[in-house]
Length: 216
Image 1 (cartoon, helix red, strand yellow):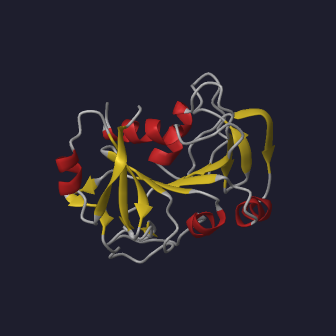
Image 2 (cartoon, rainbow, N blue to C red):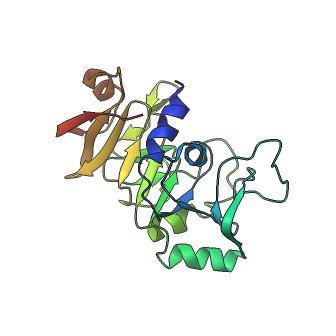
Protein backbone atom coordinates (compact mmCIF):
# COMPACT_ATOMS: atom_id res chain seq x y z
CA UNK A 1 0.00 0.00 0.00
CA UNK A 2 1.38 3.42 -0.95
CA UNK A 3 2.11 6.06 1.69
CA UNK A 4 -0.70 8.41 0.68
CA UNK A 5 -3.27 5.62 0.76
CA UNK A 6 -2.12 4.51 4.22
CA UNK A 7 -2.59 8.05 5.52
CA UNK A 8 -5.97 8.56 3.86
CA UNK A 9 -7.30 5.23 5.16
CA UNK A 10 -6.19 6.00 8.72
CA UNK A 11 -7.61 9.53 8.59
CA UNK A 12 -11.04 8.17 7.62
CA UNK A 13 -11.16 6.16 10.84
CA UNK A 14 -11.17 9.39 12.86
CA UNK A 15 -14.61 10.42 11.62
CA UNK A 16 -17.67 9.74 13.75
CA UNK A 17 -21.26 9.35 12.67
CA UNK A 18 -22.85 12.78 12.20
CA UNK A 19 -19.57 14.72 12.10
CA UNK A 20 -19.32 17.82 9.92
CA UNK A 21 -15.86 17.51 8.35
CA UNK A 22 -13.80 19.78 6.10
CA UNK A 23 -11.05 18.15 4.06
CA UNK A 24 -8.05 19.97 2.61
CA UNK A 25 -6.34 19.34 -0.73
CA UNK A 26 -4.57 16.10 -1.62
CA UNK A 27 -4.37 13.35 0.98
CA UNK A 28 -7.13 14.82 3.20
CA UNK A 29 -9.57 14.85 0.27
CA UNK A 30 -8.67 11.26 -0.56
CA UNK A 31 -9.84 10.12 2.88
CA UNK A 32 -13.46 10.66 1.78
CA UNK A 33 -13.16 7.52 -0.35
CA UNK A 34 -12.35 5.39 2.73
CA UNK A 35 -15.03 6.46 5.21
CA UNK A 36 -16.25 3.23 6.86
CA UNK A 37 -19.61 1.88 5.80
CA UNK A 38 -22.35 2.97 8.17
CA UNK A 39 -20.55 6.15 9.25
CA UNK A 40 -22.54 9.15 8.03
CA UNK A 41 -20.14 12.07 7.68
CA UNK A 42 -21.31 15.46 6.44
CA UNK A 43 -18.50 16.81 4.26
CA UNK A 44 -18.17 20.58 3.92
CA UNK A 45 -16.14 22.53 1.34
CA UNK A 46 -15.12 26.18 1.69
CA UNK A 47 -16.42 27.04 -1.77
CA UNK A 48 -19.96 26.31 -0.61
CA UNK A 49 -20.94 22.65 -0.52
CA UNK A 50 -22.34 20.55 2.30
CA UNK A 51 -22.99 16.80 2.30
CA UNK A 52 -21.04 15.40 -0.63
CA UNK A 53 -19.67 11.92 -1.13
CA UNK A 54 -17.08 9.87 -2.96
CA UNK A 55 -15.12 10.92 -6.02
CA UNK A 56 -17.41 10.45 -9.04
CA UNK A 57 -16.85 7.89 -11.76
CA UNK A 58 -17.04 8.70 -15.47
CA UNK A 59 -20.68 7.63 -15.34
CA UNK A 60 -21.80 10.17 -12.71
CA UNK A 61 -19.25 12.94 -13.25
CA UNK A 62 -20.61 16.51 -13.33
CA UNK A 63 -18.12 19.24 -14.30
CA UNK A 64 -20.20 21.84 -12.44
CA UNK A 65 -19.70 20.14 -9.07
CA UNK A 66 -16.28 20.54 -7.43
CA UNK A 67 -14.75 21.03 -4.00
CA UNK A 68 -12.55 23.96 -3.02
CA UNK A 69 -9.53 22.30 -4.61
CA UNK A 70 -11.30 21.94 -7.94
CA UNK A 71 -11.68 18.17 -7.59
CA UNK A 72 -15.01 16.71 -8.78
CA UNK A 73 -17.55 15.65 -6.16
CA UNK A 74 -20.88 13.86 -5.97
CA UNK A 75 -23.79 15.31 -4.00
CA UNK A 76 -25.68 13.12 -1.54
CA UNK A 77 -29.39 13.38 -0.67
CA UNK A 78 -29.95 16.51 1.41
CA UNK A 79 -26.89 18.30 0.03
CA UNK A 80 -26.75 22.10 0.03
CA UNK A 81 -24.87 24.60 -2.13
CA UNK A 82 -24.31 28.16 -0.91
CA UNK A 83 -22.10 31.25 -1.11
CA UNK A 84 -18.71 31.83 0.53
CA UNK A 85 -20.19 34.04 3.23
CA UNK A 86 -22.41 31.22 4.45
CA UNK A 87 -19.60 28.69 4.13
CA UNK A 88 -17.21 30.68 6.28
CA UNK A 89 -19.95 31.45 8.79
CA UNK A 90 -20.20 27.68 9.27
CA UNK A 91 -16.43 27.43 9.77
CA UNK A 92 -15.93 30.50 11.96
CA UNK A 93 -19.08 29.77 13.93
CA UNK A 94 -17.61 26.53 15.27
CA UNK A 95 -19.94 24.20 13.39
CA UNK A 96 -17.18 22.06 11.83
CA UNK A 97 -16.41 19.06 14.04
CA UNK A 98 -13.09 18.23 12.39
CA UNK A 99 -10.81 19.50 9.67
CA UNK A 100 -8.02 17.54 8.01
CA UNK A 101 -5.25 19.52 6.34
CA UNK A 102 -1.93 18.86 4.70
CA UNK A 103 1.22 20.59 5.94
CA UNK A 104 4.75 21.46 4.97
CA UNK A 105 5.85 21.35 8.62
CA UNK A 106 4.34 20.58 12.02
CA UNK A 107 5.97 21.16 15.38
CA UNK A 108 5.86 19.46 18.74
CA UNK A 109 3.80 22.27 20.28
CA UNK A 110 0.99 21.56 17.81
CA UNK A 111 1.78 24.39 15.39
CA UNK A 112 1.42 24.01 11.63
CA UNK A 113 2.93 25.66 8.55
CA UNK A 114 1.08 24.83 5.35
CA UNK A 115 0.78 27.84 3.08
CA UNK A 116 4.21 28.98 1.85
CA UNK A 117 6.20 26.67 -0.41
CA UNK A 118 9.82 27.90 -0.52
CA UNK A 119 10.71 29.33 -3.91
CA UNK A 120 7.14 29.24 -5.20
CA UNK A 121 4.42 31.86 -5.44
CA UNK A 122 1.83 31.56 -2.66
CA UNK A 123 -1.41 33.49 -3.18
CA UNK A 124 -2.31 33.20 0.50
CA UNK A 125 -3.69 30.83 3.11
CA UNK A 126 -7.10 30.33 1.56
CA UNK A 127 -9.50 28.92 4.14
CA UNK A 128 -6.81 27.14 6.18
CA UNK A 129 -6.43 29.90 8.76
CA UNK A 130 -10.18 29.94 9.44
CA UNK A 131 -10.38 26.15 9.65
CA UNK A 132 -7.42 25.86 11.99
CA UNK A 133 -9.00 28.13 14.57
CA UNK A 134 -12.67 27.42 13.84
CA UNK A 135 -12.86 23.62 13.72
CA UNK A 136 -13.37 21.71 16.95
CA UNK A 137 -10.67 19.19 16.03
CA UNK A 138 -7.65 19.67 13.76
CA UNK A 139 -5.80 16.79 12.11
CA UNK A 140 -2.65 17.08 9.97
CA UNK A 141 -2.36 14.38 7.29
CA UNK A 142 1.19 14.39 5.93
CA UNK A 143 3.99 12.20 4.66
CA UNK A 144 6.57 11.79 7.40
CA UNK A 145 9.50 13.16 5.41
CA UNK A 146 10.16 15.13 2.26
CA UNK A 147 13.46 14.79 0.44
CA UNK A 148 14.71 12.72 3.36
CA UNK A 149 14.03 15.53 5.85
CA UNK A 150 11.53 15.16 8.66
CA UNK A 151 8.36 17.26 8.56
CA UNK A 152 7.80 16.74 12.30
CA UNK A 153 10.01 19.32 13.96
CA UNK A 154 10.84 20.82 17.34
CA UNK A 155 9.87 24.18 15.87
CA UNK A 156 8.54 25.11 12.43
CA UNK A 157 10.98 27.03 10.25
CA UNK A 158 8.37 28.27 7.75
CA UNK A 159 5.76 30.96 8.48
CA UNK A 160 2.99 29.50 10.63
CA UNK A 161 -0.60 29.07 9.58
CA UNK A 162 -1.64 28.69 13.24
CA UNK A 163 0.10 28.08 16.54
CA UNK A 164 -0.66 25.24 18.93
CA UNK A 165 -3.88 24.10 17.25
CA UNK A 166 -3.20 20.51 16.18
CA UNK A 167 -4.89 17.59 17.91
CA UNK A 168 -3.46 14.78 15.81
CA UNK A 169 -0.79 14.14 13.16
CA UNK A 170 -1.19 11.12 10.89
CA UNK A 171 1.66 9.97 8.65
CA UNK A 172 2.33 6.76 6.73
CA UNK A 173 4.52 5.63 9.64
CA UNK A 174 2.66 6.65 12.76
CA UNK A 175 -0.08 8.56 14.57
CA UNK A 176 0.86 11.30 17.03
CA UNK A 177 -1.01 13.33 19.60
CA UNK A 178 0.58 15.93 21.84
CA UNK A 179 1.63 15.92 25.50
CA UNK A 180 3.72 18.30 27.58
CA UNK A 181 4.86 20.23 24.50
CA UNK A 182 6.10 17.12 22.71
CA UNK A 183 4.80 14.65 20.13
CA UNK A 184 2.95 11.74 21.75
CA UNK A 185 3.46 8.59 19.68
CA UNK A 186 0.17 6.66 19.81
CA UNK A 187 0.30 4.22 16.89
CA UNK A 188 2.84 2.57 14.59
CA UNK A 189 1.93 1.49 11.07
CA UNK A 190 2.16 -2.27 10.43
CA UNK A 191 5.76 -3.30 9.83
CA UNK A 192 7.18 0.00 11.09
CA UNK A 193 9.55 -0.06 14.07
CA UNK A 194 9.77 2.41 16.92
CA UNK A 195 13.40 3.03 16.04
CA UNK A 196 12.51 4.03 12.48
CA UNK A 197 9.89 6.53 13.64
CA UNK A 198 12.19 8.10 16.23
CA UNK A 199 14.99 8.35 13.66
CA UNK A 200 12.73 10.10 11.15
CA UNK A 201 11.11 12.49 13.65
CA UNK A 202 13.10 15.66 14.34
CA UNK A 203 10.92 16.76 17.24
CA UNK A 204 10.93 15.32 20.74
CA UNK A 205 8.73 12.27 21.18
CA UNK A 206 6.97 10.72 24.16
CA UNK A 207 6.03 7.09 23.53
CA UNK A 208 2.56 6.25 24.78
CA UNK A 209 2.32 3.52 27.40
CA UNK A 210 -0.57 2.22 25.30
CA UNK A 211 1.28 2.20 21.96
CA UNK A 212 -0.83 0.42 19.34
CA UNK A 213 -0.59 -0.82 15.76
CA UNK A 214 -2.27 1.49 13.27
CA UNK A 215 -5.57 -0.01 12.06
CA UNK A 216 -5.67 0.34 8.28
